[in-house]
Length: 97
Image (cartoon, rainbow, N blue to C red; front, side):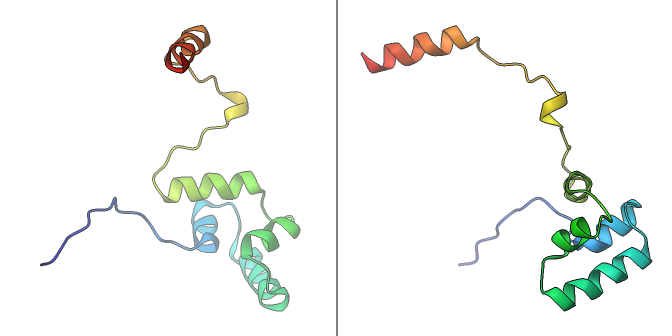
């Protein structure tokens, strides 16, 4: 019996390629970072950040975009609660009685 697992299609572009495609870094910067990565053994994201070639936020945005996800800055967003906090407290009190 064969079971087929359905997964959403995702783009598997590597971080360096995704940043290059997004215009966050240029080819020269990517090559410098890859050389440094080989030298140090650190992850490319750490090398890019340490060299000041991009920020952690830019990498997260690029990864989200690459995966087809929306990037949301929680510090700048308001999340509407489905229920007021008071109602949640009342429900939790009822469940503990």
